[in-house]
Length: 299
Image (cartoon, rainbow, N blue to C red; front, side, top):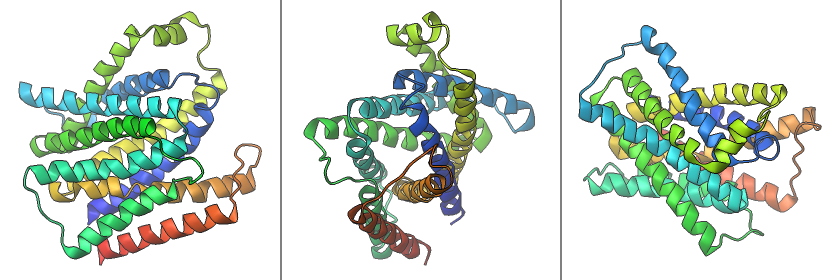
């Protein structure tokens, strides 16, 4: 179950990134597409690891598969940010979080992987429901339009997860990871054909203030750690339990909740979180579902 611990730690890092994103996407960075561009471009920095890891130049089809996996990750991130730009996070985040593990489960089932017992199946259901419930806000209903764009983002995320797993079937971890980041970088370059992105990057004198740039880079350092750990968990996990890595995303929202409360209490000028009694009960129920799911998974 080493993949389980790695995945949970990955979501802890992702929770820290989410708090940085909450600040950046509501103010200093006006276009999510620009944000996705920078994420893809910064991925090329992984090339600095080549002298220190077992980096291989694989066969051409393996390079293509790696590029496809990396491009799918950035493309799915773009659709996720598009969903956040058009709808409230409370509408799209629960939908994407709930649909992604179901899509991954469907993809693994299609190729004949069957590893679910009654216990692991129950754990999977509890984790998916807990992940959905912890980020759901009842007063902001999920509409058909928001569900459609969420389904597209979730399906793309599931394809990215599925394809990167096959990369690690054929390549050592660091080689596969580096080649997928190159694929993400190549896709990000195509964003430069977007008029909005070009205007934001080249025509304005300052896309980032120095303070904002520092916050962005610090957030991305945690983001890089999260992506590396998540990919490591994918590499370690058997194909049949790949959907569990997505289902565990609810742990990220537990970490976000804890960190947000701590920051709000200690530094209210940076982040202010207020919870009604109803919302607090909902969070407690969701955390309980996730906790029971984890207990079943590890027992």
